[in-house]
Image: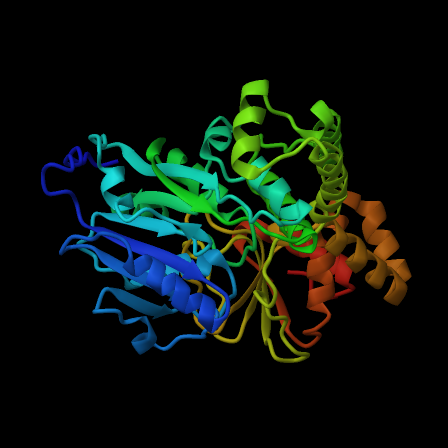
Length: 441
């Protein structure tokens, strides 16, 4: 890793910063996000970019005295895609990228607060503080619960036993570090920021806290929204477990039991309870309500842990006959492994560093398939070809379960030639066996 100078103090000329805010919401909410960005104090070398993942704004809508630029980030609907699109549109001379979520409220001097102390040259990212915005006085239980728990608090996540991690809702990233690790992985709906933090550290960069750079975060205000969020979080943790050897997320049921049994659902010290109660208006009757929400979300975790971690529409499945070749690979894209235009790739996992996919190639990753995908695919395969499915399960049940969604997708291209990358010959043979194909690579 190259050496970099220590960042200047605020009293000197600080480095230039590109502020990137991913956004997916209504036009009115987008205009509010633009106004929030425009409220930040900036220097001449700074820039403010709203990455519009919903396609609700034109570039001209984002102009407020030429301070905010709207970047089109349509296509995949995910924060990772929007953040990458914003970073790609940022000026290359900016030494830092500040990622801010659209549901945060930042003080005008947030950028300067990040540089209130020298930043060592091996620091790849600084995690700013995140505190909950106080819910309205008549807010429901879900809003009070979310504000009390403050799920995105950097302090707890930086102490993660596997590797430190933080949410990207308020994260200052060195541009050189961002480019070195290839940005955020796309094609996933959750845990992309944890994965980014872990890859950053594996590449030799440090991740540290900057508690003075604090934003307020507006949490979900309905139980339905919290339940969706919990399923997404759990699917992301399951995906991380498939990607990172040695990382085993604690079973969701145990996590739910801990939350439900710890001090009536409030697992904080007396001092913390008093402090948070004042801020988030926690009252004694909320203890029982919060415990009930803990149980509900514990069930949602169990459901989410079995789900796939891909955003809706991220992986289009080719129509029958549309792919002339299906390539089975370990990691893809990979050096020396080519698919060809119009091909489809069944890969075990993404590469260690995000790489642009070849044009006109559809890629499905087995690491994205959750337990429900595998069970459902096995059932469908068994109903259609019971003998073939039973034989594959008898030969290697683990391989058959892991490859079942890929075998089901393969049925969409019965005329396509099946091929194997050099490191995936065994997987290709197992896939062909499960799909009932005779053209074993």
